Length: 442
Image (cartoon, rainbow, N blue to C red; front, side):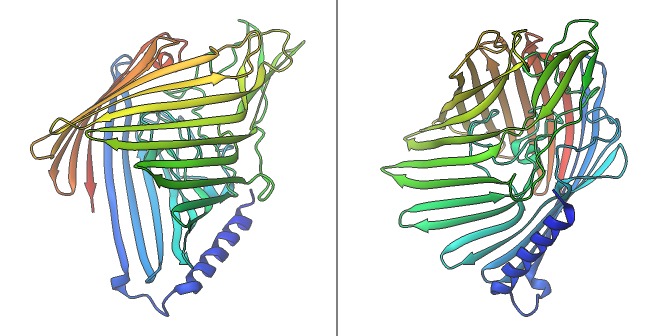
């Protein structure tokens, strides 16, 4: 995507939104400034070394342009002394020019995280600019939450809000009777951040990375990325409604799957690896209902075109094209004072399997989240367990957060991977860590 083109478009959209209802002038009382300073040190217990020593400054500015129009800008300055999560300076070939970070050095980067205008046009709510759009509410893993790509810099250990990559988006929500229609246009061709060679959380599992015979030369070709402002745009729509105590949604997205498809070609000189992105139609929905102390919730998604690795030597490119059905069903319980307990089952089902498929046709994972508050909610303990039944691997994330002051929070955490080293989680069996940090609001 051409940076001047998208920046010119966004500036034009901002100007139109402002002129639709902006005041003649903005007073200082209309401007709000806030921010967050975070610092965290993670020590790798298996490697016996510091995994990260990071600080993050997240300033936010909000400006009331009119009674119905507000501008929000969120930035991020991040530094990491040890530079193990993204060694050197990432190429950022997966990002559009308008969404790239400014890599000041191999230790420091600056990013415009979000920059959007909220306004009303008639009875419709419109958000224009760089933003996050959240569709799914599942813990740990995703079914419908596919609008924004994800940074796997720390695999899935970061919270979704921090790991999502905001995109330049036109987001409109239109009431239609008792139903809310959301329409999305996303011209931003930015996709998942995948850790490079030598990174702490570099992907090595055969479920994600083609495995060549030992000693055979491997040539990795440059990443092929969509880059047409209009033709490669993503589109989405969602209908939300409340019927008989149930919150329901119907979701549709026509989008590029955010993780590159890795194809291989066997040549006399060795193995050639090509990476590119492919479109898919996602059709699905969600539901939730509160029944006494319980909350039932679920998400279902059907993707028309998904690509999975095969070890069938007769296959031309090492991947098969199939549709996929995935779902999550969760049950939350809040009947005990100060306790929150949640369990989930995830399943992904390949509908058109072929011989040599690397992963199982039906892939199942379970999660258990337990949280308890102490000391009048100033101390919170939490543990999230994600267990793959197929690969018999998983991860346990435990944290202890203490609100020392109204704007100061102390943090202690541990992340433990276990199980099959070929599994999605087990591949990081040597990356267990303990972390300590502090978060200060200003």
